Image 1 (tube, helix red, strand yellow):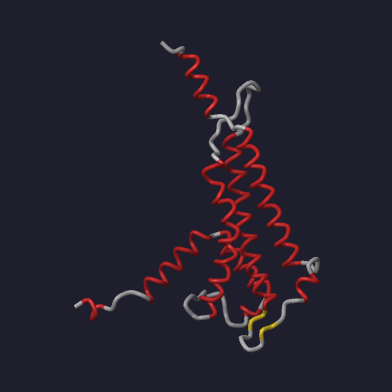
Image 2 (cartoon, rainbow, N blue to C red):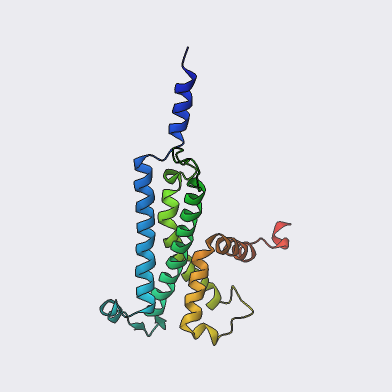
Length: 191
């Protein structure tokens, strides 16, 4: 017969963060902080001035690549901000204020399950920021507070990109609504 204390110890060990988990958590935090720093520096400073000089306005398409990159990076900024906030909330649940210093924190944050999400979310935010701007410029999506003149403001574009990165789930739902409207079958075609 197996010792119940041994089984209880095994269960407790499964609930603890292993060194690999701690390394993955640290990697994910550093990765998202790097994205935050690079995106912020790209958008709001001249730190990447040499890289920005290579960007030109494509006159035949009237695309300002500088604005496009800024919009993409602002979406990444929103996505990384969301990731870091999620990590903070998960870790604060795993490491609550404890009165017993001998009691180890529980593994309520399984980084192995969520690692791809934390790595992909900032990129998803950047891409969705560009898609949202295309939908707004193509009149597929409207916002009552946005007028054509507002969309020429660099800061409004950055805010739209940040919101798209921060709220990717809502953005995806909105895009699915637009797809349902555009590609729905007409009632005449069903008969």
